[in-house]
View 1: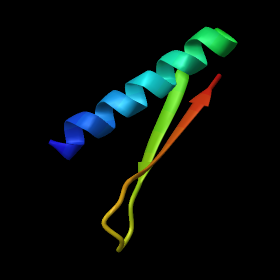
View 2 (view 1 turned 180 degrees about the horizontal axis):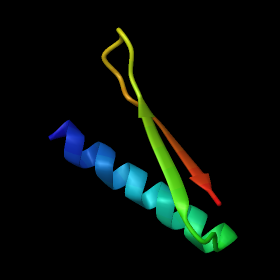
View 3 (view 1 turned 30 degrees about the vertical axis):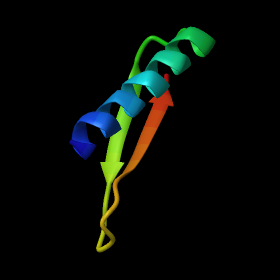
View 4 (view 1 turned 60 degrees about the horizontal axis):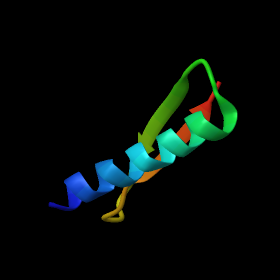
Length: 45
């Protein structure tokens, strides 16, 4: 269930970037290491 909530948060952030900056696209990246968490990067281009 955490995956669904996390995906919803990422989608909300991506939508905010689209509204604020009107980019042609948004690049994303996910990183995780030994800790039990996921770090997302959203980069408007």
